[in-house]
Length: 149
Image (cartoon, rainbow, N blue to C red; front, side, top):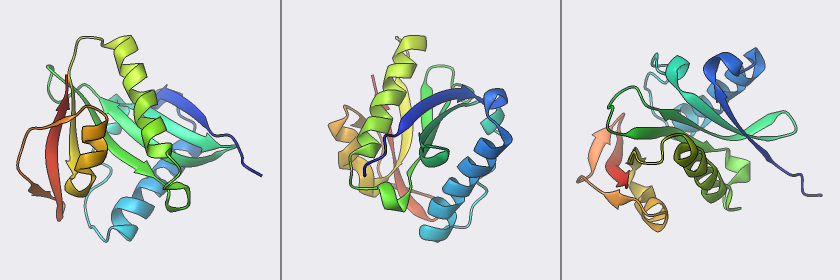
């Protein structure tokens, strides 16, 4: 039986304590444990972000955050993650489509910036992003700066 996933777009203060716990759990499962990367995930920016949650029932299976606090010329998307069991099902593309729709509803003229893991460059290029940097190391993983205008 295939369960339907639902998308949510929330300010930090509208997240439940369980959602906050579960989004940090998913981020650490993937970015810290799976990718074997020691870094400071809780960086003080979550309170200013919009949070995109993808759930099946109450379980968060994918997540991203949308920020407008670092560079006023851009909206940035970060911490894009899909749980291991849900990959290769097109959920990453659906997540990105949902995020872009929400950004365009609220900020139709601002370009979107991401710091993407370099191995995902073609995924983001397929979505219209353009590579704006050579690979650089961020938290021990090669990344590239990409922009969607």
